[in-house]
Image 1 (cartoon, one colour):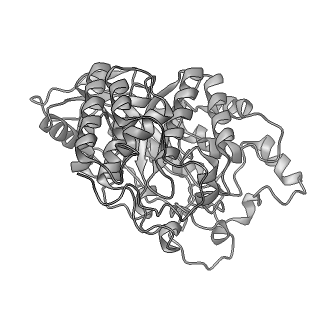
Image 2 (spheres, rainbow, N blue to C red):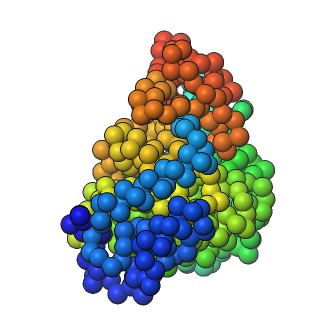
Image 3 (tube, rainbow, N blue to C red):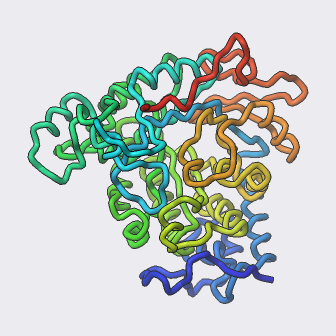
Length: 463
């Protein structure tokens, strides 16, 4: 039995060099996966397509792949499902990169002094970022995640600002912070502001690191070293999208190429920063691209051994330029989502943790992924603007009580974790109330605001 279509984009729409065709059989690939062998790209394509010798996804074969992945998950991490108490504090939506999959950004010109443009974007000063993070710390969070648009006025630090101010190059995507209604400060100033005592700061993607070195001869190592000195603890492996340049040339031609993304991640590892890794799938790419991406992540982990988790991100298409321009009319199917989680578990034999994103999948499907190979269920996320602005339907906050209820309902063990997974705490579902205990100000109190605890306002923005 097969579903109606393997992917959502007609095969002939883009003349891609890489297509999902192999000389490998599905049966051989599945046997290799079950035996714990290191899979080839051809193996991964066979598993992700449930066989290239037929159209559509074969549902019986799909279940066999999911079963193999679930067994591997149990062998590697057992029955624990982890989550973290965290806050998303995105600094700005101002960005001129023009990625076709994104509706988070707002053209930076709209933020300039005297602009009368009507937009829903924001820019936070370092002082505002610190206020938000300090309030969230008192609620018990452990982690602050910050991923933002590439504001033209943001430089790495004062040294970088001086270089940009004196440059006569017109290709640096730079305009003085004084030109904007709100000065976002430098990256170092924002990192220092969010480096609140005891919290783990997870920020500065490879794309942001590129923005933080533009116009200089600084290496990525120099950039990440300065950020680490300012308080950065780990680097999110977003901006990866699909690490195949023929896909990137369609969906994000203004972004760095896949080789430079890898270079930045290696530099972060070289200065002692942990990283995560992601894939954003379900747009114009095909299964060959997805597995090629997994191969690049696996090879990177072989060299660095510092990737703490892999996060498959199913593309949320409404309200994005890809949808508005008629390039796509849907994201990945549920079958594709489940297979992406499963093949990630089977292919990435050197990455211990695979995350299920309830922000992307929703609660019901997110929980299903925990039987498809995933073992982590994200975090509390006190604010989540990116997916919401793209048309995502799911919530911005998840309480510990909800986590405990959902995870135990599917027969798993709820476990609070630190960002790097080095600290964990099993939660007894029979011992409420449920709240974080690993954060520097956490005492087990539920995170829902009460008269003695004030929640941060995630809407603090440039008026």
